[in-house]
Every structure is written in structure tokens, then in C-alpha cells.
Length: 83
Image 1: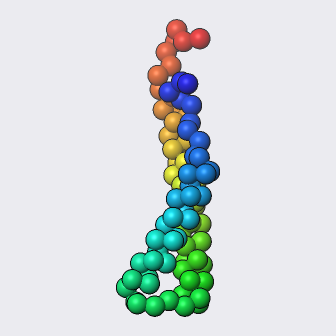
Image 2: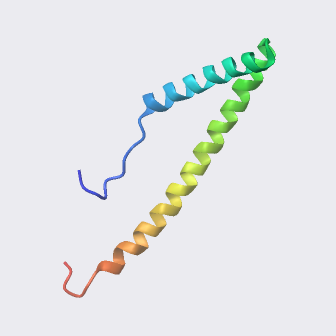
Image 3: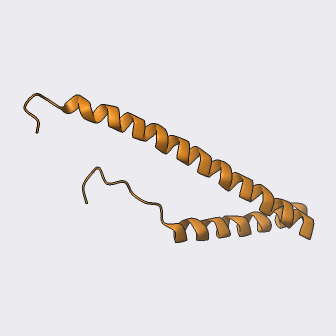
């Protein structure tokens, strides 16, 4: 693999990480408040989904910015003798 090959995210790692984070959040809310209800869990799932969407948008924006920098920087190394 060359240095310029972008690394793709692993879907299963992201999925299981999200599931474990959600379960840990439910357990934390139960520990802090002493009880839980289904409406609390539903709101937690909605908030977690919104967090995932925002994280995806930030990741997409940072990738787009990074690609723009890479394209302009790669031509700086070219010389007249380059093929």
C-alpha cells in the first residue's frame, strides 16, 4: 500500500462502537438518576443519532478540505524534469 492511499473506515468497528457507547450512556443515566424510563431511552437514542449525523458532517467537511490541500500541494513538488 502506498502512502497516498486513503484509509477507509471500518463499518463494523463504527457500528459496534456506537452500540457500546449507547449502552454505556443508558447505564450511566440509570446510575446517575437511579431509575430510567422508556421516554428517556428514546430521547437518548434520538440525541445519539443527531450526534452521529453531526460527526459525519464534520468528517465529510474535513475530508473535503483535506483533499483540496493535497491537490494543490502535490503540484508544488513538480519540476521541469518531472514526467
